[in-house]
Amino acid sequence: MSGPAKTKTGDLVERYLAAVKRRLPNAQAADITAELREALNDKLEAKEAELGRAAGADDVAAVLRVFGSPPLVAARYAGREYLIGPGLYPYFWQTQRIAVGLAIALAIVVAAVRSVQASDPMRVVWRGMSAAWEAGIFVFGVVTVVFLVMEQTGVAAKFEAAWDPRHLPRDNIRKPVSLFESLVALAFDALFIAWWVGVLRFENIIPDRWVRDSADLVASAEFSDAWGPVFLPVLALAILTALVHVADVFHPAWSRVRAAVVIAGNAGGLAVLWVLAQGGDLVDVVASTEGAEGAARLQVVLNNVAEISLPVAAIVFAIHICIEAWRVAGALRMRPPPAMA
Amino acid sequence: MPVGADIIEALRMELRRGTLILAVLGALREERYGYTLRSALAGQGVEIDEGALYPMLRRLETQGLLTSEWREDAKRQKRFYQLSNDGAAALKHLTDEWRAMNGAIEKILKETGR
Image (tube, rainbow over all chains, first blue to last red; front, side, top):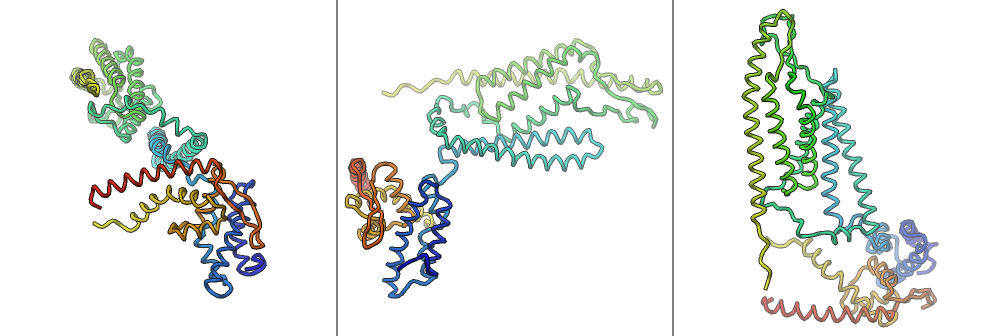
């Protein structure tokens, strides 16, 4: 074969080489394509010898197809045929699941809070879904870029070197909390905190028929003064609970630190209940003069319910403390295996 | 359930991947350019795609295992490759490893009656 660049078949080879060259590093591109050109010429000569005639366009195309597509051939010269290698890949997916999940959950919580306050809740919900989708894609992109940089800078090897079997989760003490469970819990934590500090407001209007048969009466249930001393402690406990759920996202297995925090949180809950129990009525029913009598009756009923709820809540907190204490005891009973002879 | 052809092909490629480098280094104890190298390997029963061979040669040269130079042959410029001193040392290590592995696998296959 002579003068490949000037013939129809040679044109195909040159187009192929140009497509490879575009994808090669500048410093090596000319040298590599010169070598590939020679290799293709040798190959085409052998093909022509085999056919006993000059190679046609179809023959050249067949040879080039076997050689490989330009992106594939160029990628092989790059020496790295992946963006995120096998060393980082498991961490990459784990981080994506957590980061994208958190972004979507956060967007949904924000949308839920806004929809409660909005005059057109459905519109806010639709916007929220769109925002959640965009947040998920954005976070996916950011995490991908971060891992690309980590791959390029060789952090993957440090990840593997940092791994320590002694940090393996104690799944035998308690099953790890699923990511979905943690995210749902976090969403409720966010809603509660937003409500507790007054960012999110619900109308505490009591239906008329509960107080008296009057269409004009407006009555509402409010926290009594007994809640004043526990406002900050309850907020602190809610934040602590949210932090535990955030920790569950990154470290879903049981740990002694988590158990200690849960025990402390539930003990704090018991203290709050004790303060509330000393404070008298927990609920005030506020109504216009017209319905004062009915409101007073309802207030008695609600406070009776609250009075029963306090010990029930105390029992629940105590059970949680016992369960975690039992788990800690179980972990302490474990002994390392005897040394190998 | 029989093993799928795609699975067999993937396993075969995985098995061949490391051994191709050994074959290339072994064949380049004698100076060759890409086309003659591929023909020499094929003559010994080791087929390798050009699309994989040329990048591999470049990578081995970057690693210092091969040397190369452009030279005229049959009135055309060719890039000739040959094993460097480091490449010869690497080839010896890999050959020892290959023989040890080959012997061990032969023994295992005999013991399991295959």
